[in-house]
Length: 230
Ligand code: NI
Ligand code: MN
Image 1 (cartoon, rainbow, N blue to C red):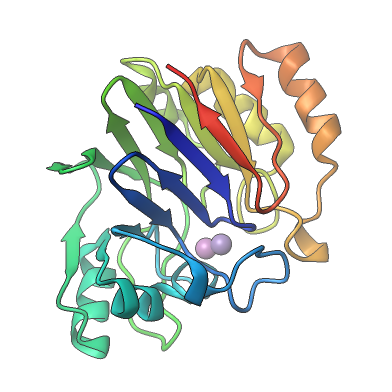
Image 2: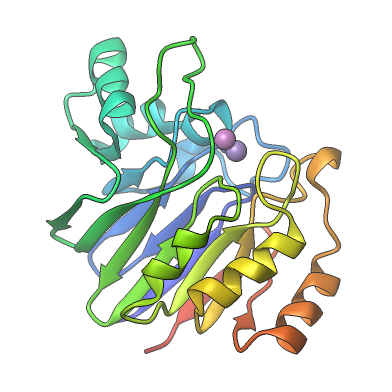
């Protein structure tokens, strides 16, 4: 199966397969680095890691236009359902998994907060471990480094998408330590260079990944894609 992982800037990603398109944390219209507007993207599913503005900003408009199913933690899913009448909103919780028609999704822990933009309680921040046929793709979400990351490595992770921007999430050094715990074949950095506060020298980081870990870094510019090979 051909799978294409596209960085939409910040922590926004799309995962395109033959029959399905997943969006993760769409923050497009107000993102300084997004290559697309919310009106231009397709989605069957929108996965949301937590309630912060830079992760939920365009979920409602995209879901209303495309009728994509929104997957989020229970509290965030209920917020979409009750506040925006998004009936196609699906709640899960940390540690739980479910088979969808594109593959299996497990909600993983993340060390972060999750308040929603209007001040509503947003439950626990999360990541996602997505299994598509043979591919296991781990989106860590906004998170600090934590030792339980090691538990996603069995069976092995093919691709890990990790925040590296520092300040709000782990920074480049802790992301290297995370790679040692997760041991992915490929690693893609996320949640950096959106604003001056989270600017990083990503080529230096990529060199460090090559030198100090067994993972291969894949560095994209916003709008670029990585074609996942089995
Ligand atoms: Ni956040
Ligand atoms: Mn964030």
